Image 1 (cartoon, rainbow, N blue to C red):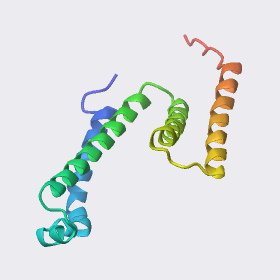
Image 2 (image 1 turned 180 degrees about the vertical axis):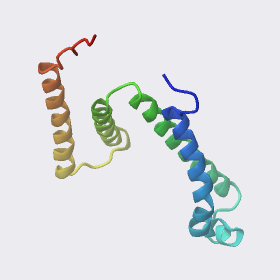
Image 3 (image 1 turned 135 degrees about the horizontal axis):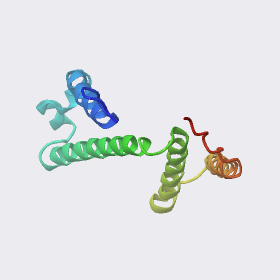
Image 4 (image 1 turned 60 degrees about the vertical axis):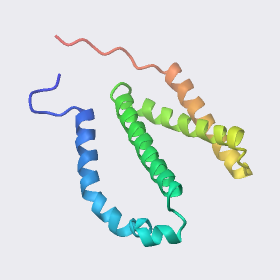
Length: 141
């Protein structure tokens, strides 16, 4: 139960995100914003539809990343940190496999060994977790 005046993890995440946006937006514009000034954008060919398309993609990428982070927080509140970590590991393997199958990215021997090692580690963890289950907690009076 959350006491009055305290924040749950989702509200804390939202507040941190909003604060980070307002703190980092000016810094980002100073460091990264020069290419988007009208004279620089024209030199880079980012005028008209190309500039709008780039802006749409940047906004979509930011929105997707925010949704990913929010979903990750929601999942973490429902499962243990170790389970969350294993899910994160599996997610990375799925992304790698999808990029190979869909985008036809080449796979080096080192990449294949690393992916196999990650899968093997997840498999071993699940086997150990199943074999050595936590004993039931003792009841307190």
